[in-house]
Amino acid sequence: MIEIKNLTKVYKLTKKQMAEQKTKKNMKKAVDDISLTARKGEIYGLLGPNGAGKTTTLRLVATLLKPTAGEVTVCGYDTIKEPENVRKSISFLTNEIKLDPQFSPKYMFNFFGRLHGMDEKTIEKRREMLFDYFGIKDFQDKKIDELSTGMKQKASIAVSLAHDPEVVIFDEPTNGLDIVTARSVTDYLKLLKQEGKLVIVSTHIMSEAEKLCDRIGIIINGKKVMDGTLSEILTSTKTKDLEDAFFELYKEYNKEEVSYVRSKTNY
Ligand SMILES: Nc1ncnc2c1ncn2[C@@H]1O[C@H](COP(=O)(O)OP(=O)(O)OP(=O)(O)O)[C@@H](O)[C@H]1O
Image 1 (cartoon, rainbow, N blue to C red):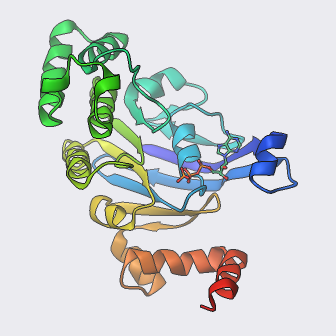
Image 2 (image 1 turned 135 degrees about the vertical axis):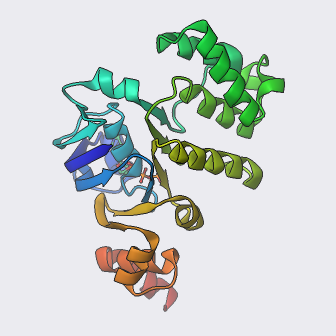
């Protein structure tokens, strides 16, 4: 289980970042008082536009960042007090973490398996199963550098799952993948859920959130503005699909931006 309580993350901005973000403030509140609970046997989706704070939230859960305020527990372990136990319980995948291009998928899998303290027999069994599922076997001895984007992503996913963790945290796992590869990834996430794992993903793809996630947390400007099942969200927003629901919430929580877009488009 993941329990997030009043989580806040403020970044200090460099002068360059201030210029890039066109702001005079040297602080950016990327995550603003988010609380949520995600349970075993479900896929929880963080849905939000670019810059909403999804990656920062997942990095805080994965112990890669320290919160400015609030707390997170993963499988009962506090991310600040017991980060090692949290790391043992999770798989974390993000676009910024890449496998070393000079090594092969097989080498990387074995390396991470040993790092997690797995014995050679278990490593081989897990590798065979995961490489088989993701169609990596024929490419397992090639350099990562020589693989296609989809194959690289599938290899990263397989390696990240080597130790069979209870909690799977994937930041935009289908980003940049073709529809067939993306489907093999989302189908595998459903299998993990059926095994009783907790899967938490971020996405800005409405259809993916609709089809994949049991519950969805909508994040706008660092705040969780709503969460629930798809039908709960549609009922509360009186809309017929997630895109309309998202836009209703976006208008409510982002009035300045929406009126700017309207004035530009006469919408
Ligand atoms: N290391 C950092 N230093 C300063 N600001 C940051 C840093 N990382 C992220 N931000 C800012 O924090 C905000 C939230 O970023 P974050 O990457 O968490 O959003 P996101 O929802 O994952 O967006 P995307 O879908 O574009 O990945 C953005 O305004 C971003 O520019």
